Length: 284
Image (cartoon, rainbow, N blue to C red):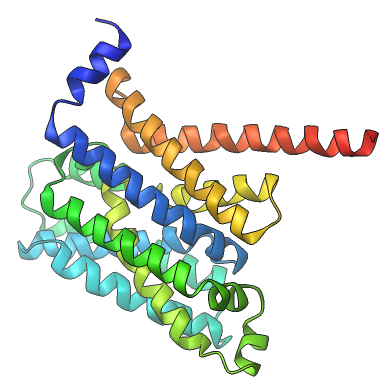
């Protein structure tokens, strides 16, 4: 059986189709949001919030309730508090994210070790942190949730493109011109929180930042226009996820780690292209 026949065989299964759909949609949302987050120096917010979601999930496991009932509201609430706290200058971005990341991860791991009834805690934690198998257990609800979320994110960015651009590059000027920056920051925080929770099933909580950061910085290497950066970042994010998922199925590698490796590889290609283009301009 050659590669194409093997891929055709896998694509007959609904769980594979669900994994690809969710992977594409989540990667697209992460890449688009990543451009704004990188520019606002919130590149590692995905890391901090993913650990908060991990901590909330461990409490849900102990309480034997659906993890979404705790993960979504807690992650969204913390995202809003984080944005407000850092915008008021009380705590620096990197300090607040570091506090959240380490604290939530430690508490979550402690709780699941002390109170979990699972016979294999280490395996459960590893799956959650690196997303090795959870992407293949997605149901119809998860797919539709990702579709709705993607429509909301794209609509938000298209309709309020100018406002987001203004808030991203000069928040003080936006405030001075009458833009309600707090509202836009809170909406962004809610979207980030929801995406982080959904992205945990794709790459796990430890690798989410890669989906946010790498497509954006790859685009920054080649383009200067804000619009072109967003479009290219979205294309790169989707491409890397699709290839990563397919390769992981063919080779039996962890899905999350495989996607991140392709993110790194594409970034290096963009970096080399930037050097080549810069050299060609100097020679003219």
